[in-house]
Length: 229
Image (cartoon, rainbow, N blue to C red; front, side):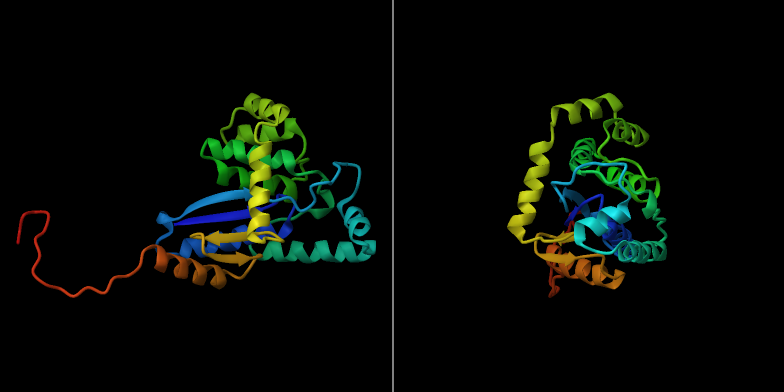
């Protein structure tokens, strides 16, 4: 059974949603039959990278909030993150366009490291205050999970996965996805947002029941593979 997850590394609810989904998956009896694919979504594709701007001030300016309200909102998501064991240092978050980070995840996916890349990026952005638009930073992060640093830099210079990122974003638009995280299970059931663990559990069970339907069997005379009839 396939689970597709649209997210953006700059989305605080995406990391929280990831943890809650992972908690649900650990409780799911058929977790070994689940294939997870991460997909790209940009909350602000026109964002200009500017490490000199404080994230609270950026949010206040972008959304028309007061600085105090922006700080309160970031404090709120920091508390939510702590509830699932995550550490958010929002004051250190770097205002950066996420397009290169999405190209990085597509390269990682090619090498079977898509999930590892997502975790690495979220931690780097929310906990460690790394610049997600910087090629050297992404190369360093990639090397830590087994990717080749030079291949990462070449990929970003050539925009090798630009079309793949745009395709994911276009697919999200086609599906009517307006916000992330967004989880699509078995191509039929969807969960929007960082929902509670039981919501993910229930949806996994429902999707799996159709993926591997339980059969009502009426027993009768049979022949088995060992030749016994």
